[in-house]
Image 1 (cartoon, rainbow, N blue to C red):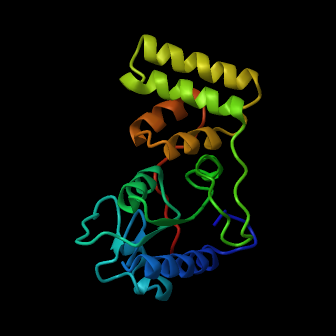
Image 2: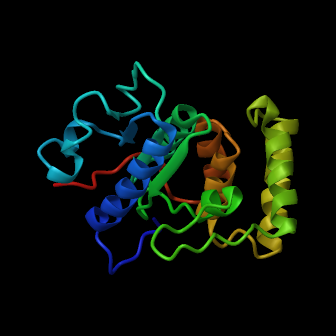
Length: 205
């Protein structure tokens, strides 16, 4: 569910949850909600159905079953990483919020479908995919000083020269779709010159 200024997070979450619950029934396993802070959503009717054993966060992520679908509500990179791990092939519905980052790169890298319009996200440009491959390659050693860091900085400079670094969130979230660890996403974000902290922010209350 891409973020739009004319649609509330609650409306987007309701659509995502309805879709995920249907997908979970098809898998014959319960749907699970992932947020960055569990307690932040207690008392909100929309989220109460997940309160007993179906709501997890990066700090409280224990489940005793395999989810049939996963709903990610306004996730930080850490929460989205948890979503991808929990899903393990099951359906995933993500409610985007512009803070701490936009998720267009994630959606485009995975061919996600907009649950409101039914349209698939456009594929990433092949040239951008090659740059992402290169960033992945140089991240094999954690972008440590020397070969890895220097190589990644050259790739980012080339991206900037090609006009492909105007939206750093697209790059960072596309790397997240490839399973790049959160700490490495932060390193790339810093090298790309974005001011995003990639830390969770409060969306309720």
